[in-house]
Amino acid sequence: MTSEETIKLFQQYVVPNYARFPVSLVRGEDSYVWDSEGRRYLDLFPGWGCNLLGHCPGPVVDAVRDQVGKLIHVPNTWYTEVQGRWAQALSERSFGGQAFFCNSGTEANEAAIKLARLHTPKHKYKIITFEGGFHGRTLGSTSATAQPKYHEGLGPLMAGFVYAPFGDLDAVERLIDNETAAIMIEPIQGEGGVRIPPEGFLAGLRRLCDERELLLIFDEVQTGFGRTGEWFAYQGDHVVPDIMTLAKALCGGIAGAAMLVKREIAPSLRPGMHAATFGGNPIAARAGLAAVEMIEQQSLLERGKQLGELFRSRFVELQQQCEAIRDVRVRGVMVGVELAFEGAPIVKACLERELLINCTHGNVLRLLPALTLTEELAHQGCDIIADVLRRYAANA
Ligand SMILES: *Cc1c(COP(=O)(O)O)cnc(C)c1O
Image 1 (cartoon, protein in one colour):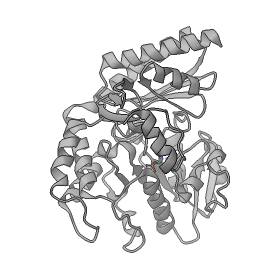
Image 2: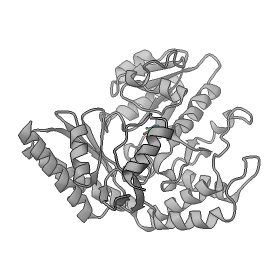
Image 3: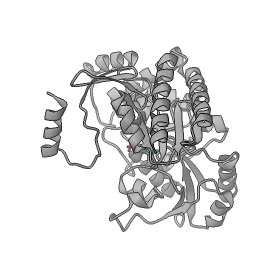
Image 4: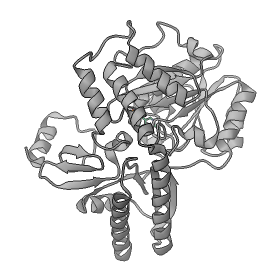
């Protein structure tokens, strides 16, 4: 089927809630994808951050192929070895807590919101979240997301979220009252424009949480599982949360998510209070375990740091030559390039040059490349972006 024929199917049968590029993709391999016309694209935004190990990573493909013929799904009324081993693998690489498994980032955040309310005294229900943040699309997570554009027409939202300016510790302190249960934040804002908080901000939140007996929740759905060159972004900041949520890259591109919680908090999510039918299913668990092994066997965290330095030096150099770039923000393979103008035409021009990137928050070009990207391809991608930006700036 041609891209055009596929698009016709969508126009007739698929809810039009996404803005899509007019291209139908058929195959992917590491940092390349192919469309139904046979065109090959260099993908520096594989799977919207989910394909951190590249398209169809071999070890994950093999693990899923093996598992799918043995046991696809059983309910959480039974034990499976693979879910237990997956929880152990995540616990040992983070803060030694316990895992609740679900299927998407927003679901992991819903679990965190419920747990925060359940664990703290009854009169405490408020959660402080941050302007420019993003926590997902279910109604609880949407309410936690302090961006008015995602709220239009949806109200009334879920009560109990209090929005603070990102990076302003004094403002956070002023917003805490005796009904506050938790503070929830992305250690680096993703959809909000790859915004890195000021030095000491996360440590300050930790201190406030300790002093006022609040839970600190890190939404690491985008930053987690190797994206920043650490297993989890909090490890780079040396600030340990009480609850952490993970999804996107967690299972090498297979749908899977988790909430990790400190051991002493976990029992507050008691039987009957929360569940996810597909959560921790054998396919996701096998894929998740294979992803952990692949990252370790191929030393991909180290690679993430090196790739980050490559992107940083390329874009900082470009910033010096090109007034279009206002700021460059990089942590591992999480790259934000803030422009002086809207980024959508740049993304479109890159697509025409067979390069896939993203723009978020209006004017921030965002790359979430695979840890397996070669340096040669990283440079190739940067060359195209540099050329597109120079041409665009010259014509503006
Ligand atoms: C993508 C994202 C979510 C939502 O994840 P879904 O799997 O789409 O529900 C939540 N939080 C952050 C930080 C994200 O980047």
